[in-house]
Image (cartoon, rainbow over all chains, first blue to last red; front, side):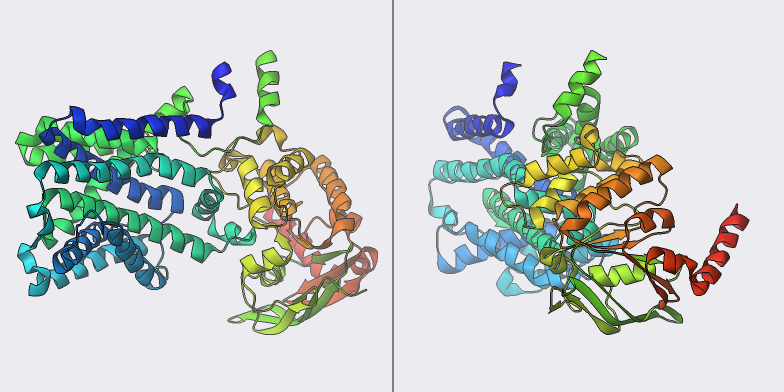
Length: 335
Length: 244
């Protein structure tokens, strides 16, 4: 019982400090090759969490978030190659550009609902991909290298990229937690659940969805920039690949949409599957699909959904306790 | 005394159907205006126009002296308009407490006391025991209670009640009437209701409408005794009987 004396946000803050310390210490203990894999895991986790934020916290279903992965990456590569600036310093630009692009398309795509909106973003992703593919000054189909990192020391590049990827992962967990328990998180949840009622309690539904979409897409763009910075090369076929979307969907659905823990589990399963079945070619994709179908059949709320309902564990949920239930629980156990 | 809310010449048609036909009424502070009419008479549409969910084609709506005819729904809420839904519309994944807390928070009328207000409203509306359950899991009665609780948390100047007593048992209706009577001195109420005895117990005046037009207005007993109302309602009674 003493454990409960500390309020959850305080405990989460302590966990965040420990996690951040682990991330900071990692380059001293982990080989560069393993760090590269961790960067990929963190980036893919951030992609998934970005989509989870939109689908599970804002209530915007998008099937085109690869658009922002590509935009973030291209923005960073072009800005760094043109100006010669250190990509690590201008990384926030990838967020600003992706968020700005999301803001620009919002007035149009928000006129559409549900599946139409979801697919419209996918269509825009395809348009941007073919636009870039046909422009030589954007690298055309063969893509662009990241010039600035060539002259830097390898270990500096690896460590810096790792820290950015680690920061993305930390924000994906703890940033999302604090956002979800904030006033804004409550407004987003209300809009997600019922737009009509949300406006009836004084929430500006359009601006709330707009803000959520811009924030989530900007974050995906930032993660895209970090991911492609770690591979030093970006090309339109890969950056705007709908397979990114498939991976995000797999991770979030299998883990549990609308939860922070779910995509952590989903990301772990995705990378384990990939490691085990990497040599099997198409079989690995079929295994992913089969696993997703299986989880959806057993529990539409994902693996974390089962844990939450069966075991009553909720680590990073946004539940605001009323303080009224305590008394009724006591009466229930007494009777 | 100036009315808190008034409606002048409100008109709205959907194709051939007229849901509001040059409708005018006003409600003062501490007063409850009832609106009755058979199914399809345009009651809920009138409500949606008051709340800002649909726009009238003619006429104006004035809240505390300000013309709000073109004001969006969320802005009207901030100006003091609170509504319930005939078919309950909770935030299904949020808990009952969070539903009420959200209303207390975003109406911006309870700075710093949002959680306390939400708790006290849940106690007052009999929802305390279900405070931490997802609102989507509540049975109908509790969903109806939640509609009222959420509207109360807005601390509105005008409370719009849409068939809040429909589907409740006699005992539940009595509880509800008591609660609404308690609320009445602090605001103006516009109440659409089929359960006329509940309405009569609270309303100071009743407007009867049919095909969007006013057919009678007056005290509850006057309106119930009005020939036009009786004629319209005989039809409804027969309908209900034949549906069985």
